[in-house]
Image (cartoon, rainbow, N blue to C red; front, side, top):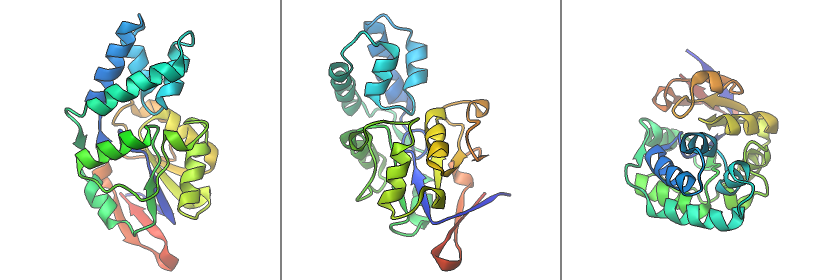
Length: 215
């Protein structure tokens, strides 16, 4: 049994609330093959990063901005096999309104589309690839996520599945819960705590509008 007390919760999207792995894998594998790159490596690197930064990392000789448009359009066109992780909808419903948001490396159109396909609520304000100058593992996304909630980073708990996201959360000063849906547990060493599944989490109201996360 574990517990964290916080004032707000910041969710990564892909790999935490929704399982878009089939979509992500198809798009990035195809793109990698077209450019003579190792598909397995490219897919591994792509999780948890902005697409434009993934491209710059794996193929610095290419025009990252131009290739990013190609990848974005393919991701928008591919939602086959996208599913909601067990416990995601229930967890979001149990959190107080205005006390949670999404911080994703995807663009706003892509994040909105995937949430709608999954049948999950689209936050009025969330942090996407379009809202930051530097993506995860830079702390900027989670610092902005805390700001959206009107909180300090240390008052927030982050739920993440990717090493880059956990590093971003740690650098921002957030505590984090890592979920090994995409990477092995030993790759999530920057997490404050690890759980096996989102469905383990329960929300309870604490004193002074605090949130208790229990598992």
